[in-house]
Amino acid sequence: MMTDRRTFLHSCSVLAVGALLPAPMRTVAPMHCMHAGPLGPHPTPRQGITAAKVLSKDDLSHDPALIPLFDGVREIPEIIDGIRCNCGCASAPGMYSLLSCYEGAAMAQYCPICQGQGRLATRLHKQGKSLDDIRVAVDAQFGG
Amino acid sequence: MLTFTSLLSLPVPSQAQIRASEVGSISQVIDGTKLTITYSRPRSRGRAKLFGTSAAHWGETWTPGANWATTLEVSKPVTINGREVAVGKYSVWMILKETGDWTTVLDPEFHRFHMEPPDSAARQIRFPVKIDQAPSVDVLTWSFPELTISGGTIAMQWGTTRATMKFSVQPSLQVTLAEAEARPYLGRYQYTAMTGRDSGKVSAFVVSYENGTMKGEYDPTVDWMGRFALIRVAPDVFVPGLYDSKGELYEVLRPDMIITFTRVNGRPMTFEERWEDDTLGASGKRLP
Image (cartoon, rainbow over all chains, first blue to last red; front, side, top):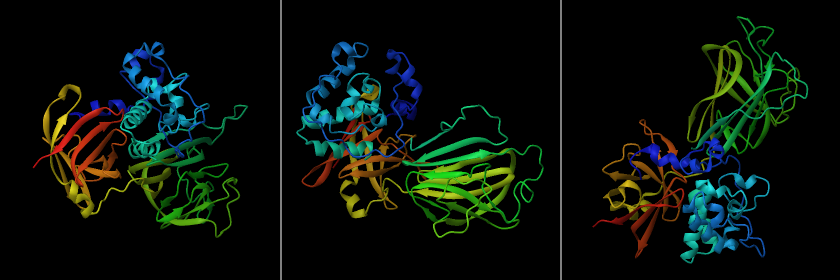
């Protein structure tokens, strides 16, 4: 709970123009896409998937606070690849799973949904939860 | 957060054409259901009277638009004026009457020219629609003037004549909870903020039950949240639903905030409050 609504909902901004902001401002005005269509099922993790394309700390120098999150995702690509991204980017070309949000242009650098799902998944995995358990938790919070 | 309106990308002819009735579109998302109305928009062009004239005569099965028939597309089943409308795209027609309700006709054959209204068919969806008078608009306009978390009003207006229809969508969440299921959670919890400027601050969180719904409230109360619904999204996992001044639910803070209880010997004893980015916002511990 936060004492004022504006502050709390700040992280829920849906201003797509946020994507156009210079990187340092993105952390001030986070954005995520708006999902309007059906989300579909969670993807099946691809056999032999690796974290080779997940951004490294060198790629995240503009926002070092994200390094632990990306490092956590890098440790469990076979889990993250079995989770659907709920922010709407899943329907974009080349996107397969939440793991895609941490690769290349890496929407997770700016999107609180991608970040939240990644943190939730890595936290629950550390607690010993299975992929199915994590999917249930993702659906509970982000919608199924 | 539950709602979003936008003009859609519209088909643009390869050669620009100036039309008396330019194409327009409006869409509305409610709780994950998208309704889209696409139509050509006739202008009054100085005509003082529109209905009961050659523009739209009484008794006519008229498409509320121009050129190709107005279409309505729904992404999930909806109910309009009490009639179920399945997923799909429909041409929209209205049977005009000088007095009393008009009849709306949704026909699954959606690509029809306005001069070719459909014959009556079993596949059609028909329902009466209320007509009233409103301050004049020059261009025929479809809109969604009223919205709730589960539906709203669709309006079509041209000149001073307005047709309005109530619609509802399938809710994605069940707000109510049986009292027996809510009872174990009820009580007062110590609430400790874990982040932000209030980090470490201790207050209280009260879980109660009224009108078939589990409720949460901070003590001292937080003005913008008040006493809110605790809506179950998984076993022991809840999201807050906020009420307006009329007691109507208007927003569900999902995924913005999620409250997860942990049980000890079967009884919810502690909880974690996390935010969209999984930040631990606060923790709670049942008070004796």
